[in-house]
Image (cartoon, rainbow, N blue to C red; front, side):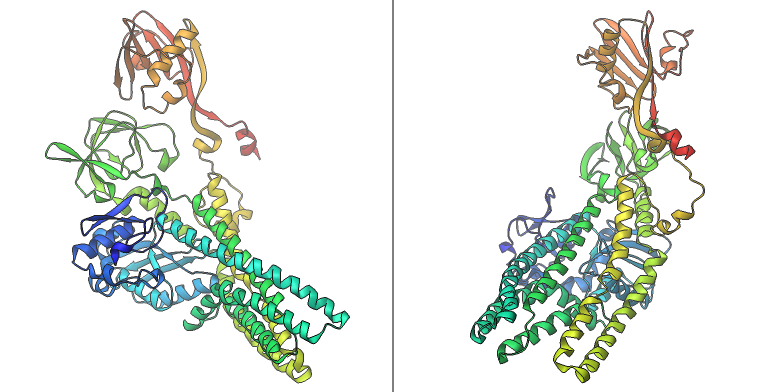
Length: 637
């Protein structure tokens, strides 16, 4: 029953809820926790259409067997609902759409090749690219020819479960896989150590004429320890191999599975008949090493995801929407075109829109990298992700969710990163033929050795399968490319396409962006002139700037450990601050703002922040984005 769902588990998909996620749906008078907005939307649709029987009759003991889409949902085409799609689908033309799907159980380039080949045969598909390293599928399709639910169903038929990409869901899937790998590694590691200890006794028995009864006993003990390794720890390889065979293809896990199972069956047969050779230690150790490699690969993927440049995570979850003269707080994803929203100073703008207020000063550094605020006038466009640096703003929404400029930039980046470089395309193509050729060579090897030396035919064949496993061929290229791209992203270098890594050696011209590249991207006090007591000036400036949201204010707000709080303060957006301290009026801001009191005064240097009272100018400050020390050397290199 649905009421028996454990705490900390998503009510809809039965997967662990990531830390910090607080989403829920109302079901039979109770609030049920869900792991992401996608599950929330689907669950609400099920409940809204009276299909709650799905939650009552599903098998909670087998969450992995819960169908991706229940039969009722298939009829409703819930993932084709425009309201549901607004969270993860971007319209790129009259009928063309783009999205990124999370595809479970992608293990190598062969999986990617199979998915891309299957979708390429699908009418209405424009483009499909699989990123093996982060298990994402970027697709573009013609909505007038095929529906997204049909694409997901087509992937399910070839054994791949696909869901709309959600950062929280990705992290939950990786956490679940990591826990599964740790359990299998633990079993394989402990069993391998025991089997190896017994193997040493058998090795010494070769030169010391080990008693047949003792040898048989050691074989049986080895069998007991090796069996969990083969039947439990090796399951990921068998499932992957079976899935690829069912889809009419082969991947690198096919020869691995044949080698493991073949060696185990042959060793088991030797134990039963009491003669021959057993290789329990070899298959146990091989399984442990393979699992270790897969586990390290998973950790690399997890680390890459943590530093992924998915800028949509900076978008606010709530928005202030006007209604009948009042304000209501709603989820940002529920905003509609033509809604009027209110943005308070310091808040991030949740949607694209048109400015209705007289003027605004916004920080667009998330989009442009430029740290200086941009001044906007009534009717100017405002982009989601910008930060309001002035007074409270009113904005009319023109685009939301996946239709915003920021979402478009992220989509272009994801599409570019998903596009494979030439070397990876060649490797993916070769890997398919490599595995097929390997199986053919193994078959020939078995036949030849069966003719010359039947006792060693099986073992030589298994050695060929194991030694020539194309793990490095299929995994090294995508993993190394993804690792390089994410390493560059961590260093604030945004790579538009992975294929650029191939051509970087031919570069002869480099164009630098100033902010955050040749400079630090943060305002800093460069120079100052003081015309009064410096300690008093610092205390006044710190006290005023600590009450300002302007990015320049951060560079001056820490000038004093004992800031003086103003008795009254008034903020003039884009100009400065007028304040009263102990009966004295002060102005702090631009030169033009100060010249209202001192029309003939001119700064001595390129100062952009000036402090003055009605009697005189007290100080001037030059605050700017500081140039990096090594910028000259970089440009001249």
